[in-house]
Amino acid sequence: MILVTGGAGFIGSNFVLDWLAQSDEPVLNLDALTYAGNLANLASLQGNSRHVFVHGDIGDRALVDQLLSTHQPRAIVHFAAESHVDRSIHGPGAFMKTNVEGTFNLLEAARAYWGTLQGEARANFRFHHVSTDEVYGSLKPTDPPFAETNPYEPNSPYSASKAASDHLVRAWHHTYGLPVLTTNCSNNYGPYHFPEKLIPLMIVNALAGRPLPVYGDGQQIRDWLYVKDHCSGIRAVLAGGRLGETYNIGGWNEMANIDIVKTVCKLLDELRPDPAGPYARLITYVTDRPGHDRRYAIDARKIERELGWRPAETFETGIRKTVQWYLNHAEWVAQVQSGAYKEWVAANYQAR
Ligand code: NAD
Ligand code: DAU
Image (cartoon, rainbow, N blue to C red; front, side, top):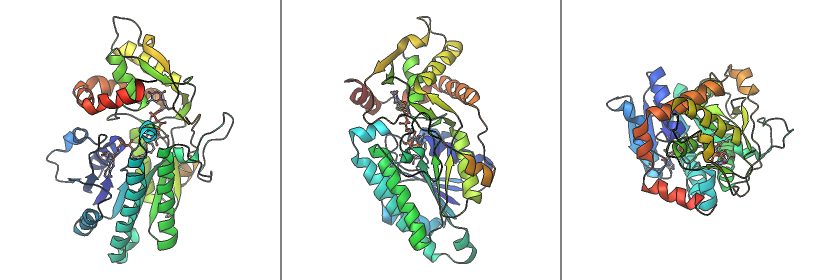
């Protein structure tokens, strides 16, 4: 089996669902169920004996040791993290705890476990660290996209904590020989995306007739990738990536935030027209994010060259599926907008 951390979050749950749909290999899913973790994402796996869920923290060494020795996974795919840049600005402590200390703890547990393996089990073991393009910092308009050789220049507490975790993973390979793989991916979107992030926030706000808050001038650029393409990229690297290497994963799809928001509005106008008028009427420019990175873009040629991976979805097909998914899952959308979610929205947007 494989051990997945953070498998109740946005990307982790998509990964677990896809994995179990495509392979017989069971998944041990370790997740602390923070505000971002949601068992409803995994509801379709109820009764599936190939999915074993454990409610726990990657920072709990005794628990991780026990899980590794009991279940003997052949790989760890590490998604668990605090993932939201705005929350890292409001409260960086949790990011250091989970992203840095938690990854350190997991690496140490993996190293001890790997040390007990022999023969093929030892040779085939993998620690796959899921990271972000934000570690490379911000691009100027004419810069080439981020390659794996770009220097690390993280600018937010979130990206600094992810950069730190990437460095730990690298060091555990170089010093101890731990068989690691790292992927650095661009912005994901798709089903089960928590509505604190741009695309799902715009969808749920528009449907509720609330303002659509665009930071600054809305001209910041991100490289959007449909989440299931990220999952297939991780599977490709886990299966064939070279040990100790990093692989960038991206959508070849740079878009300005304001164009993303307008696209979402147009799709909603078509799929769920509002008698009050076009959704774009709700667009509201608000105070910018402090330290806001201007542009991210991924050069994904290495993963294509070495492993033959390319995204299957275009932005047009992926965003249409995504908007339709939110329209079809009103219950999920209502459930995730709990009291704690409303508190976050008030904390982040009220004074903007
Ligand atoms: P998410 O915030 O939706 O989910 C994170 C999950 O980790 C949640 O289920 C949460 O409960 C769990 N978790 C948090 N702290 C934990 C702990 N201490 N122990 C165990 N579980 C814990 O995040 P996401 O968007 O799905 O991102 C997953 C990973 O992918 C992260 O490492 C993130 O840095 C990386 N990433 C995300 C994106 C993106 O666009 N969302 C892009 C590139 C890379
Ligand atoms: O690049 C990969 C990263 O993408 C991941 O590592 C992070 O985990 C993930 O959260 C995401 O980070 P971003 O900060 O790019 O994503 P977010 O959805 O928060 O914001 C996308 C852009 O939209 C960013 O430029 C900020 C802007 N934005 C965001 C929100 C929430 C707004 O204009 N208004 C908003 O209300």
